[in-house]
Image (cartoon, rainbow, N blue to C red; front, side, top):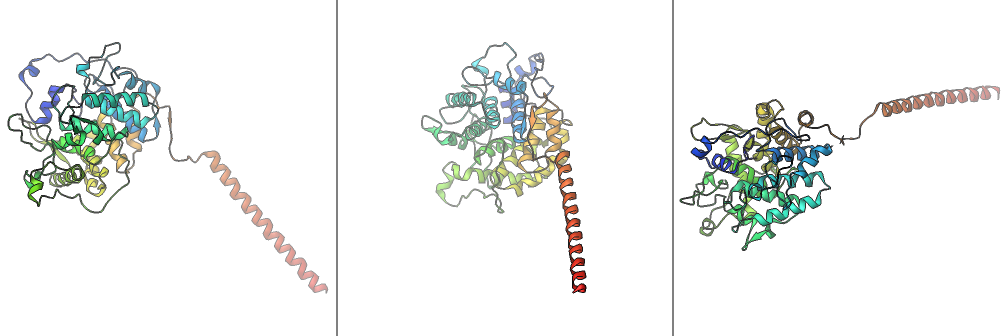
Amino acid sequence: MLTAARLGAAALSAALLAGAAAGPALADSPAPTAAAVPDGLYGKGDPTYDGVWRQSLALTALAAAKATPADSAVGWLTGQQCEDGGWPSFRAAGAACDPKTEDSNATAVAVQALVALGGHQEAVDKGVQWLKATQNADGSWPYNPGGPGDANSTGLAVNALFAAKTDPAGVAKTGRNAFDGLALFQLGCTAPADQRGAFAYQPDPSSGALAPNALASAQTSLAAAGGHLPVATTARTDAAPKALGCDSASAAATPVAHADSGEAAGAYLTAQLAAGGNHLTLTTPGAAPTPDYNATAWAALGLIQSGHPQQAAGAVDWLAKEGAGWTKGGTDAAATASLLLVTQAAQRDTAPLTAELTALGPALKATAGPAPTTAAAKKDDGIGQYWLIIVGLLVGLGGGLLLSLQRKRGQSL
């Protein structure tokens, strides 16, 4: 979930997440022509950069709501998959796949959506194989194949592996597995105490130093906690997330262990949420800091997955109160689906958001909820109650009559 609209282009998303200004070539490039919105796709905005992303989030959230999406909605997503197993951000009808533009983020969320829907094992397997094939030698994942790895892409790939029941520890290149890839971006004991557990988007290209990034920390925390979309864990602990222990000299020289990664990320995010008034903050060069809805949503999901819903509650409350600005009144499919996923994970009332998301796509095939109380059932219950009353009255009358006869018989005796 790279930005609210996701902006799909790898160079631009990398610049935004790394906190660097976009290059002049991007600024001088003409705006691309908006693509037509295909039938079956959720949302009405240009799908060029986030078509697969928003569709995957929408289908995942609807599956968690026990709703059955239309065949056209599911078919559009499966139809975007390329023969090699990867997904691009968006592919116009009839357009050929270009392996260079398939991306790990779209592929990872598509895999999670299809797992949540069920019945698409072949497509899921091909997606997982694509992720294995495009993993970097250091264990990380790039946005597009062959590029440098980043925390967000690596975290999303790990989410997909967990969803597909593939152990990330066994997905490796040159001896470096997916957890090793995550560790490349997490700040450990050599960082200042208030930054430990955070994730950087990428190391500084010159120095290799890691700087905390709000979205990278929040989005990657779900993978560090061993989770995937949708978050459905019921595990919880009353204790706050455990900060990274850095007492020994050996700890300072080693990467954060996978066993400690989720708690360390949770501790960092808890502190950041408290300092920010229950939300994380987006900082971009040349612009005033603004609330980061996207990062706040991922932080809540990561904390809930790691068993700390109490520490996520403030962020969930803030999103519930302020989220309409993010979802544009329920018209932004990706944001609406993301907010619904958070609300589901927090076990809050999901009906309004489910209705908003449903309205952004084709009509559902079915919705499975709690056993409905139908009018006929109520009528039957009512009839049953009346019969009990009638039977009770008859028993009472019969008993009274019998008692009266016995009295008369006694008097005659």
